[in-house]
Every structure is written in C-alpha cells, then in structure tokens.
Length: 174
Image 1 (tube, rainbow, N blue to C red):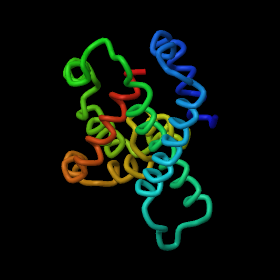
Image 2 (image 1 turned 135 degrees about the vertical axis):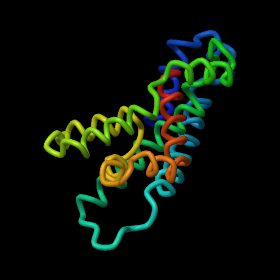
Image 3 (image 1 turned 30 degrees about the horizontal axis):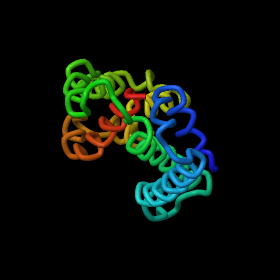
C-alpha cells in the first residue's frame, strides 16, 4: 500500500470506522485507492505545472513542480478521501463556508497596501505561508502586487482564484 492508501486508511479509521468493516478486503481496497490517487495526482500535477518556462532555473523549475504536486495532492485527496460522509451535503457545506470564508477583497487590500508601502513586502517565508493559506502560487501573489490595479488582475485571473477557493474549501472539510 502506498502513502496515499495509508493516508486514506488512517482517515477512514478515524472518521468512518463502520465503513471499513463493510469492505470485503480493506487492504486491497486501500491499495487500489492509493494507486488511483497516485495516478490522478501525477496527471494533475503535470497539468498544473505546465510546460518548462524560458530561462527558468533549476530551482525555479523544482519549486514550480513541487507546488503543482502539492496542489494536486490536495485536490485529489479532497475529492477521493477527505470528503467522504460529510455532515452536510457538499453543496450545503460549500454555501455555509462561502458565507464565512475570508473575502477575496482581503487579497486586494493586501496588494494595495504593499503597493502603497513597498518596504512592507513580506519575506520569502511569509509569501510562502500566504500562498499556502490562499492556495495560490507565490508567483500569483507577486503578479498581483505588481499589477495596477490589483482588482483587475484578480478579475482577469478569476478562474485561477476560483480553483484556489475550491482547494481552500476542500482543505477545511478535513
């Protein structure tokens, strides 16, 4: 059983132990689920990473590929493992979450504040943390800060922001 199967098994043992008892052979089930997750993570990671960028350094490429893999793992695990047996139907849970989630306006305000006070640009670690929190890439945040006005950048990249919002929602379902 690979790491994804092991994670899924641990999640089910904690949150859905009665469902495991209904499986004829849990080891086979979670081994197959782990292989499915691994295949989907690999496919999605390559899609998210996209083609090599011109003049991209080795470290930049490694960071791009690692970020894509991390996002792919979150999306696939959320779709195949974490969302099992939610207390509310998924659409109702999403509606409730939308009412309390941090607004995208917070990102706009953050970018405008950085533009007004360029010396307040966060450190690399703070940018990584913010990117992780919002489920976007550091490059997305850097382009947001560099755009005039930031609101137009978010509107132009609404699909990417919507995907990040979905990732954040699924992350919180765990």
